Length: 371
Ligand SMILES: Cc1ncc(COP(=O)(O)O)c(C=O)c1O
Image 1 (cartoon, protein in one colour):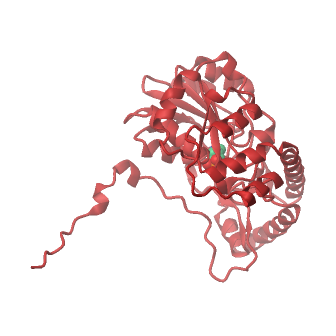
Image 2: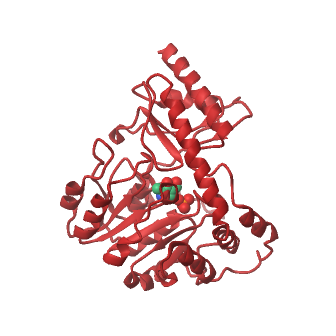
């Protein structure tokens, strides 16, 4: 006897909050695009990992062993690097993973997290996945924090305020006094995303000496060229640590190969500081060159990327014209973000930056000619 399969709507099982999350759509590689592809859309390092990290990975042959569940070696290295106690550090498979665990730690259904858009798009998705509500207190006209607005938005359901400094995608840093005032006055946790701190030469870790409600969230994806290895970490107030360990997956969320690469990178800081200096110098040179293109306005940045205004209302056609030539950057078409006329470009090698510059000039002329 054959049983006829029951037909039902599987998608109806998916939580509404998850169904509403827009899927992340990376730049499409158009059919017939040139074989040359220059990836300047994810703020990766064009130089890859440091020589010591490369050597450690080449020699790595422990794929059959589980990682150290306590992440002890990596946490010790990070402790020496940031100057914070290892017992207050916990790592994840990228900073996204640390952020995920933070949401698991804090959010019950309907709890609120304050963010200031335009900012890192992943926050919204993570908050929604974990049943939380995003409260957006937009950045001011100059992309600074609306401190009064943020403090006024805090209520009894507010668990967390995320401050991304330097901010992605705008690239700028916030007034340190504004950040400190939020930490000092907000009766909740303040998570400071320092993914690009190494480029800006800033850190909010000293705030942790004075205030008990702040944590610093960091990554080796950007300055250390380890985006593919997924190594992020956070420095948290001591009382939260047992709970953070409780929500961190038991078999460790960071692979042994990743921690080996990260530890070796942290032994190669002279090299990595050289890379940071080179990227910062190339960024400033690119910004100067962008200003030469009529109507293009690179915005102030302290990161390894530049957000630029273009002389068009909607940057999408320019974004597409660049993709057709194998140049991948980011655009932000969602009108509420207020940067639909902008493109964000990661700093590549000097050669890649030069190609981008020429292609942007060309793409703008083509798009404006066609309009
Ligand atoms: C502001 C910000 N936070 C966090 C991340 C995630 O970093 P990771 O690669 O460590 O997950 C990124 C990556 O682009 C970012 O821009």
